[in-house]
Length: 157
Image (cartoon, rainbow, N blue to C red):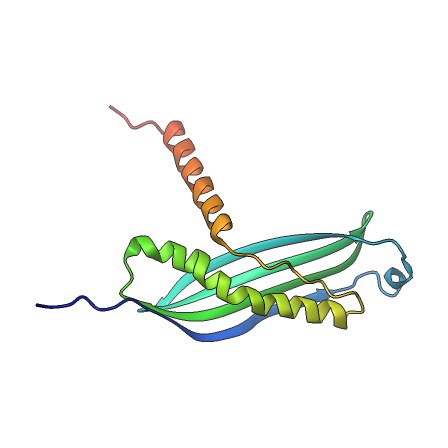
């Protein structure tokens, strides 16, 4: 009687892959009294490096503007190396698209808060979040794209 190997999910390393802070209109922006509008853009990508080792990168871009003037721009790419073994193929997408970004989010959240403060602004504190909804939305968009391609490329009879 042979048992199938147990699934394994382990964090090998968490690191800051890229960080950019721009304050293009300094020092004039520090004289503004009006609160800027803050736009948050988030992206997550995962890729296999070698057998059972995956890199996932969670990139968050924060853009603060006042009318048409950029107050500041922060982009942080928080990455992690994850050891994943004995996981069924249908479970890999949720692991790389939900579990890994959920692990990385607190680190990138702290980085963004710290660098906006060091740039001379009130810290931007991102609300806690989970990636289940984002992952489901990405899967729906992928399905819609596949359906559109099938409709545009009918198979010959």
